[in-house]
Amino acid sequence: MSPVAPGRLSGFGTSIFAEVTADAIRHEAINLGQGFPSFDGPENVRRSAADAILGGRNQYAPLAGERVLREAVAAWMRRTQEVEVDAETEVTIVAGATAGLVDALLGLVHHGDEVIIVEPAYDAYEPAIVMAGAVPVRISPARPGYRLTEAVIEAAVSAKTRFILVNSPNNPTGRIYDEDEWDAIESAARRHDLIVLSDEVYERLAFDPARHQCPLGRPGLRDRTVTISSIGKTFSLTGWKIGWTVACPGISRRIREAHQFTIYSVATPLQIGAATALGCTDESIERFQAEYRTRRDLLFEGLEQVGLRPIMPEGTFFMLADIQQLGVDDDRSFCRRLIEEVGVAAIPCSAFTQGGDSGPVRFAFCHGEATLREAVRRLESVHKILA
Ligand code: PMP
Ligand code: GLN
Image (spheres, rainbow, N blue to C red):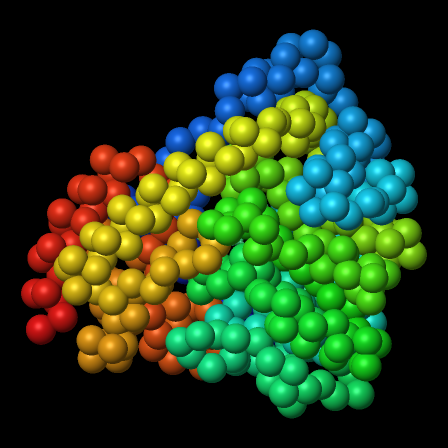
């Protein structure tokens, strides 16, 4: 067999985000597809990383991460979630949430373990599980509410299930799990002795900030949860790829076993900058949330006006438009035409499901008001591709 024959990840194709961004550039469309802000994070944070580079902080960091950042993560968890964690044994600095998830899976999985993931599921989850030698098992809460129930989880549990991977605030639905949903997750996790992998990269992008719950704060989940987050979304620094995992010492040991042989340690000066970011004031977080509320409302109103049936998100910087209700049954071709004929890029949600069934489309609103207004203006002509 040729050494370049399709590998075990070839079936996953090309990242939909990369594809849509390339198409958007080619057609000079406004890119509300791939979710990265069109503005940079706080100047003092960037300056702090620049100072670290010029000030001689350019060699390997300790494997688990710079102490100053691990302590900043522990203080952040206390301040934002009222969760006490030990910086020494429970916090590991990783190369963004994506690498945190991969390290957790590589360190914890035994060959053939099953990992439950919730559709629509972020595109990196399934390949990461496959890379770790585990088996993804998808569950699909009913649309359009996407509420997670114990019955839906239970139906997917087998003797091989060892993990459930959840994401709240959720990309792409914009949902934030409520108390009942966390109860369902906790109950299934305890009954079947599962580890909860909790992707919380949108933790501060919650329009009712009290709504986001970190499962580590639940006594019943404290020793069976890996919280995974990063500075990318909260501080508009997605290109830094600085994140963390937080878990009890036993689980963290396994994560570090993987981390030492995947990345070993993460960019030192950016860790210093990330520690500055996490030390920000409560007021700056509130300002950030208020700015996002304005952007969300602007896009919601705009999509409603042009007849695209937006669904109001509870968190994240994503908004779904329920084009199925408008009779669209191929979200991919809709998004292609949207780029080419309307000049706006969005993500087809079929990319987040295994069967690839057509679904809603996702618009990102991590952009300036002028950009969002121009996108809405262009979308006034969307009727020509709905006809
Ligand atoms: N999880 C989700 C749900 C995401 O939307 C993203 C997108 N950035 C990530 C993880 C990746 O985060 P990071 O860039 O920190 O790896
Ligand atoms: N998380 C971002 C999104 O969902 C982008 C991630 C990526 O480009 N891989 O759009």
